[in-house]
Length: 208
Image 1 (cartoon, helix red, strand yellow):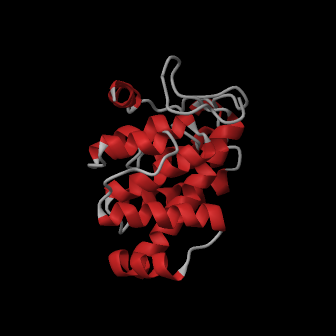
Image 2 (spheres, rainbow, N blue to C red):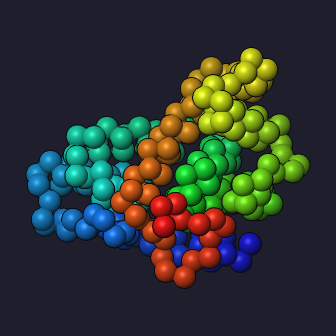
């Protein structure tokens, strides 16, 4: 719990930074060294609700059109989704844990707690365990997301529960947040974007 709270404080410290935390493989692109296309996307991201180029964005700028399309999808799925932020962040944490993406965990564990996700559920996800005492909507997100990754689909029972709880739009948004943060986590792992040194996180960085 102390680690999560410390991560929250550091997350706030870095929230105003205009440039991404970088890993070992893709050097940070200074704003004055960007192409016109890269700068246009960077400006759009920095002027939006994220207010900075953290996480995967420095890597994505290598392909500016892709970066622009992905960041618009991500803006919807993070800030405007039909899902409650608590379960949306839960799905993001499950994705981070699945991919062993420490930066994604570092960035979103504090957001999950702020959105009201029980710290015990956050800890269980980080440890790769099914959480106990989940609320109805959390249990649906857990089972839906688990089946989707494990079985490459979901059975009729969990699909029906998800539609009943979230509606068809919510089901699509749940699929979308899983898929988008798969791309985010894959990017972070390949680019080796890491959290600040010294952070104690619940799983080993993938690819290390």
